[in-house]
Image (tube, rainbow, N blue to C red; front, side, top):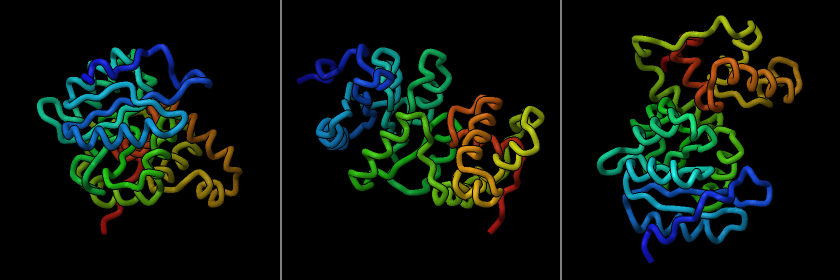
Length: 239
C-alpha cells in the first residue's frame, strides 16, 4: 500500500466533537513511522492521516490534509523538522495545526530552537506509549506539552545563553499582574502552583495566562515561555 493511498481526506477533524484527532507522522525512518502508526491507529479517537519522510513533504501534507497534530522528527533529510515547524507556524491557514517535536534525547540542542520555531512541545521517541497518546491529546486540545520539570530543564540547559540581538517587544501590553504571572510560567510553575503562591484560584491563574497569550499572540504556553526570556522579562538563573 503506497503512502499516498493511506492519506485520509481532511473532511473529518478533531474540531468536530464526533471526529477523531487527526495525526500526521513526519519521520525519515519508516520503521519508526510504522510503530507510531500502529500505536495511534489502535487507539479510539485517534487517526493517522498521512506520513512524511522529510520536512518538505510534511509541510505539503499538512497544507493538504490539515491534521490536528503533526508528530515531527527533528533530523530529517532536506528540510529539517525545525524549519518545517517554522513554516507551518507561519502559515495563517494552519493556525489550528499543532506540532509535537520528537527527539532522541531529552534535552538535545534542537529542542529550544523548535519551541522558538512554533512547536507546542516535545516528546522523547522512547517515551512510554501511554505518554505518547496523552501528548497527542494535550497538544490537540491547544495546550502546550511543557511540564514544569521540562520547562525548568530547558531554561537551565539552553535559555541561559545570550538572548537574541533583537529580543521580542511588547511588555507594555501586559498588566503588572500579567507580567508577574508570565514570569512564573517561564520559571516552570503550573497554574496550580501559580494559584497557590499568589493566593488566587487556579481558574483565575489560567485566565491571566490565557489573556497574556492573546495579547502577545503566543500560540500556547510553550511560546509564552520563549517570549518571557527573549523579551528580557526575566533573566535565566545561572547554575
